Every structure is written in structure tokens, then in C-alpha cells.
Image (cartoon, rainbow, N blue to C red; front, side, top):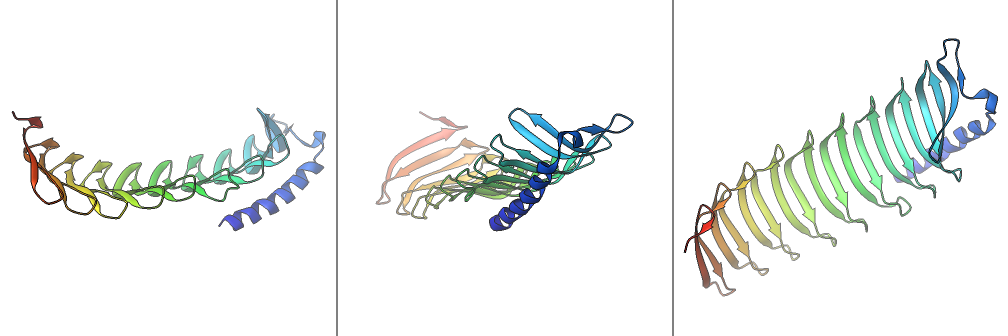
Amino acid sequence: MKKTIILFLFLLSVSYAGAAAMVVAGDTNKTDAGGKKTGIWMERTDMYTYYGKYKNDKKEGVWIGYHPNGIISSIDEYREGKKNGYSIGIDVAGFYFRKDNYANDTLDGPSISFSHNNGAKPQSEIEYKMGKINGLKKVYYPEGNLQEEGRFVNNERNGKSKWYTSDGMLSIEYNYKNGKMEGPQKTFYKNGNIASEVNAINNLEEGEYTEYFENGKMKLTGKYVHGNKEGAWKEYDEEGKVTKTENYKNNELKK
């Protein structure tokens, strides 16, 4: 996909930059008999210069922005004055760092951001549906390894979400329903063994909680009731012997 976008940017920049270069001052920024913007316009915002077309006072078609050094800074597609289609961001060195899709000025479809290191590694990949995250969301570490992945429905986590260490090992695996923890919740050691596990209902821990040593042996057991510690909580050594017992009532330690 990266090669496809680079080729697209190259062809588009050559054709459109060439056309813009041939435009003289008198050919831009015109209005029709009714005072509405029409034809090719050149606009400046802060340090950037933009070229594109107006139709009936509304942006239409492809608009291209330029950095002060002449490198393209952005490419946006408009229909009737609103972003509709692709939207691409490019840094001062000419490498793209963002590719979004819009419908009626609203993020809709895949949104991808890249590191500023030649745009070679993604920073995030997010699926949008009319401005809300719907579908898979991925976030990456600066070096390129996956940091987080999970599915969303209307901006809320739904289903399994996973987090990873910087060296690619699964660290956390939680389950969600409508943005709240629901079902098995697990954490892991770097060797892949489970570090802890508990069930959740409506965002609260519920039932047996178990914590393990890195070698897989029991370390701690207890029980949750509606998110509160309840009953006997026991700690173990690596030989399996109970080393400590504490009793709880409604999350308070009984003396």
C-alpha cells in the first residue's frame, strides 16, 4: 500500500504542481457575477499555500497544500465544500505521515498515521464510521511493533483487546462489552505464562481471582463479589505452601 500511495502522490504532484505553476495571478481567485468564488483559487493559511477549485463558492475536487519549501503538505478531496474522499498529510521532507478517508467532513473508513521516519512504520490504524471508531484499532510502538489492538463499536471497546510489550510479547488480554470489562481478564509474563486471571461482570471483578509465579505455580488466590474482596485471600510460596491468609468483608480486611 505504501508504494501505491507514493506512486499516486508522485503522479498527482507532478501533474497538479505543473498546472499550478502555469497559473498566473490573473487566472486565480476569481468570482462570478454573483460574487461567488469560482475556478482555481490560491489561499494562504499560516505558512502553507493551497491550490484548488471553487464551484458556486464551495471547494470542489482535489486541493493541494504546499510547505514553504515547495514540498506538498496535504492532498484533500472535496465535494460541495466538504471533505469527501481521501485526505493525505505529507511532511517537509516529502514523506506522507497520515492517510484518512472522509464523508461529509467526517472521518469515515480507514485512518492510518505513520512515523515521521520516512513514513515507513505505522503509528496507528483505526477504522471509522461517520466519526466514531467502528472496527479494529491498532497502535504501534515507535520501533514498529504492535502495542495495542482491539475492536470497537461506536467508540466503545467490544470483544477482546490485547496489549503487548515493546518486544512483541502479549502482556494483557481483556474482554469488553459496550465499553465495559466483561468476561475473562488476563495478564501475562514475558514467557507467555499467565500472571493473573479473573472474571468481570459489568466492569467489576466477579468470582475467583488467581495470581501466579512466572513458572506457572500458584501465588495468590481470592474471591471478588461485585468488585470487592470477599472471604479468605491466600498467598503461597513456590512450593505450594500457604504463607499468608487474610480475610475480607466487603473489601475491608477483617482483624
